[in-house]
Length: 67
Image 1 (cartoon, rainbow, N blue to C red):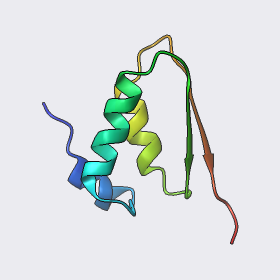
Image 2 (spheres, rainbow, N blue to C red):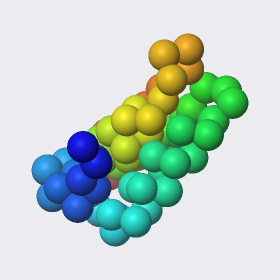
Image 3 (cartoon, rainbow, N blue to C red):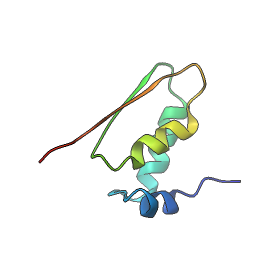
């Protein structure tokens, strides 16, 4: 079953087009090291990155919590 990035945008209140979350997911899939995701506190990009990560890689998410 293919991941639905359009649903991710609506479910996680993503602020970017679905194509950007697809690109984030692909970048994480091809990562050779840990991934640091910096977002706006909605979590859409963290979900997109985590979707493709291997077990041996770590995702760290830092969300904007003010302003």
